[in-house]
Length: 394
Image (cartoon, rainbow, N blue to C red; front, side, top):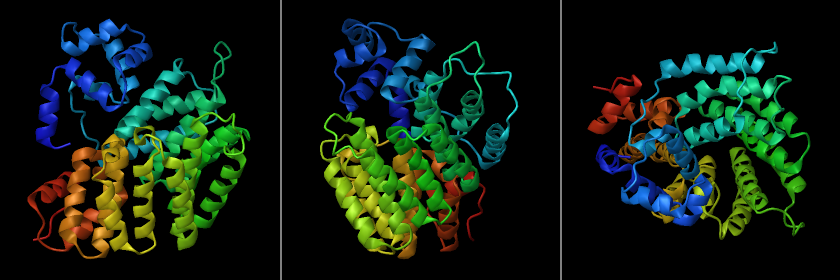
């Protein structure tokens, strides 16, 4: 989001922000009211500014339903993480993953905390997620006898989130440990296994083990097999599509263009009727096509797909983390064809959407360095480089 866009959003009354976000997610006032446990009349009064919205607990509930952070809903810009803050936070996550003694603390409202952590992740608030993970992992590892054990579904999600944020931050080996824990916790259940395989495949790709990534995703797809079961719940289709995308990216990572193309075609067929804001849809598949193309060395095709996909309504429904991460990926495609100005533009755009994606991820730092070395840079990219701690070339 640009500074001007942020200022406009900040100046809106909180009720108007609620109305905008609700409408953007396609929820009627009645559906929204049911999800937050309020009446339709209460929602209408809040959105029109007749009723004040000032209780933190209510704001947090609304933010969770709308898929945003309370800071964004309240019009506050969260402080941006730096590399120096992320490193010790990663070490605390490492300690939580490798400790086996009985902890003294435990998260009692794990489901709400996990939901909030996922919301923070979707908004690329990686430092906030890292700070939450040690307590969440503690609960995943040990629950006092006086409390009911968390359900496996929830624990798989904790390990999946851990692995995904660690992969982003260049900690593939540590991410593999979390992904392996997710697989173990899944206990062979097809749906839980499908959830766990996503970060495992991402970790294996980060370790340049694309063939293994393809193997685990295709195995999970066979086990899930929603097509053969008419009674399968709707989320199975979303999981299937997500696995197909991961399998396509795995195939592309070791040069298998045929498999990558077939898998993205299958995912595109499945994406019809799906909403991108749920994490899977036509735009999601198109962005995967672009990433697969640039991975396979067809950077011109990747950029063409990217330009088309980012003009769609589905692009704006995607999580900030997803959009910014895609722009960072495309900066490498532009660099590959020596269009350094375009690479600079998408990096700046990514920073405006989700600063943590450009300021804490090694792949974004590498792209920034490449643009800086290419020669004179735009003023906004120079400012970004300074924030990251890089010195522009004279």
